[in-house]
Image 1 (cartoon, one colour):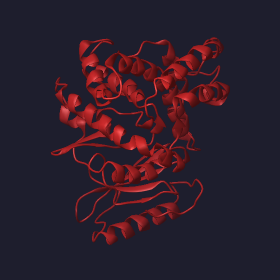
Image 2 (cartoon, rainbow, N blue to C red; image 1 turned 135 degrees about the vertical axis):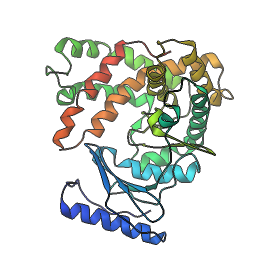
Image 3 (cartoon, rainbow, N blue to C red; image 1 turned 90 degrees about the vertical axis):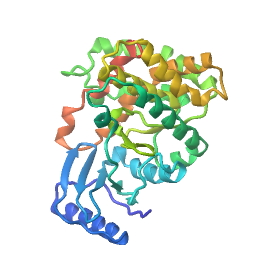
Length: 332
């Protein structure tokens, strides 16, 4: 792991591009490989990704913006703590939020294309839970490396601060919160704080929480699954993961909220914690954690949009949008 201190830069400049290409070339040369053609870029306000052709097949370069820069350090840590559960980086440069990763093969979305079979998800969720269990003892170290802290006991204050951020909430603007919605959320603060307190009192270990675990962020390999795209991750209650995962499964498989298949997936995921708590307690925790995760998603979007890129406006409605989900039922 190498480090270098720098402030936010403009990814579109020739100087930045030359610097990044030189770093990629240097790190590949250390592995005995070389770039063999032009990179193929994909740019979002929160990251720039290059597909880099090499003499050993494609690799992937990613540069994160300041709000998601912790991903590089987290990738390196997860590769050490949970080998085989994530891609082993070719290289990372923590302070600049750069990572160079091997190709992961097909995603779960590609594997499941056109199929209505939940068998893969029934294996993915226990594998992901095992990663979280393995990482839990190292949560404090990950916080020290810059992974956002969204433990249940901190969420009431984070929610309070978010409600004060009228710019991020697009208060009174198109696609933003109305004044009435804002007041409703402010009135909800005691209920939200109570949910946070109840979840914290269930005394389950916090760990890394991906916060965007869907079929596009899982690689399928012959020997298991690789979880990737950790830019939204935080240290939080593990079960918050279920919000995005179950919603995405419901959408892909055309399942209504509360479908028995979603309950089966939830319980397959929770099995990893049955040695510590009874199933009724785990299910209660899952419901509370999914409620907290709606605020977590708003917070992760606000971090992701910590950019001067004009394109951020295209995604800005996600912050107030996720807060609005607090008044909708959880997937199960």
